[in-house]
Image (cartoon, rainbow, N blue to C red; front, side, top):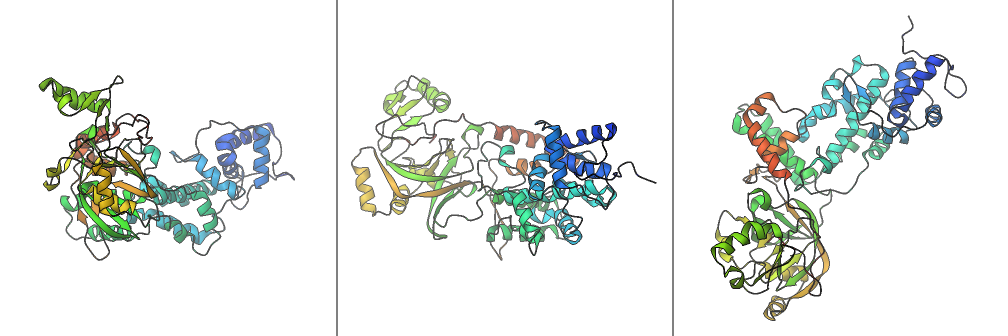
Length: 502
């Protein structure tokens, strides 16, 4: 018996007989998702399993019908798929199905996506439930479903399961762009398509060591709450690794906030390590996660104090001590900010390293040297206070220490550009791993791990929602709040300097 979705004979243009009902149905289908889902739906709704619609016919029909910019996404068994992503991919393939002639690759990709937990990823993010019963769907639905699962899995490996648009404001790391549709398109004609997609994940020793640790903990014969929590910390940190560039700069400044430590790398080797003070755990003072470059050093810098710090910290001190401004050489500005003159006791100390970012967060000196002897160095307004900033300046500027000290000794505010901008990373890595070693867990003093792990699940386990729901809500709320963005232009002596959080 002929099925309702079997197709009649096509004419020379591949459009078939023009019965009013068929034209109406074809028009409705081809409008969906700018023609992509419509084309594939037409194969499924009006084609036998062995036939395929000529790609040019689909595009010509789309042109005749016009393009509707806002269309609902394609849906398979109640699951909405990313139509724009699918359209970009199939446009590269002339809108031809890809899996009917690649059955072995289709099985391999299905198996790999279903093992997404090997990367600390929830397979349900990639329609795993539908993939397990993919053979029960018509051919066109199988085509769309598998392609969508592979592409979204590829995106998760390439950028993280949480794309930048879905991250918290302080999760500001972003790797170089990659078009996964192009990667899959080229991989399908290569010797090992699955390996090409797997290569989108970080290949660093840290990432591989975390994956190995994840596997060891997962296969443990003694699962308990501590082990489960440890697994989730590892999975959260695998996600953070995916936010980093695939090739880290050989020369870089690396600040891991939970470590409260700064490391300068040269040729991928640590050459300088120093303690740092990081942002307080309170919401508005947490240090962000970001990647930028250090462009210059400002010696004897003034501190332009943002208005939120003025209101939260300085005005209460002024009520307690009417001479507070005079004692600390602070002037209130008409726009609500304040300015502290440079000097030995100024908040930014002898030097500040200028690094453009929307958070007004910088590396700088501090007059409070005793803070570096504390275990808890979460004391700043978000900036990174460096224990040995002059040594860091000498290394970054490739100048002897006595030259750096002479710049400070003048007492004048002086900007000195670095010979070359140096990449700087502010990170929040709470699970550290190296090949052949067990994972080292750092304190999650900002409470970000649990909130991140929950966002990596398509649906949090019901028991987990009951047990940690309140904590998750509180953490998520705190992470979503952030100080208002301010101009990130580096300050200069000849123009008003920007605000800095200290």
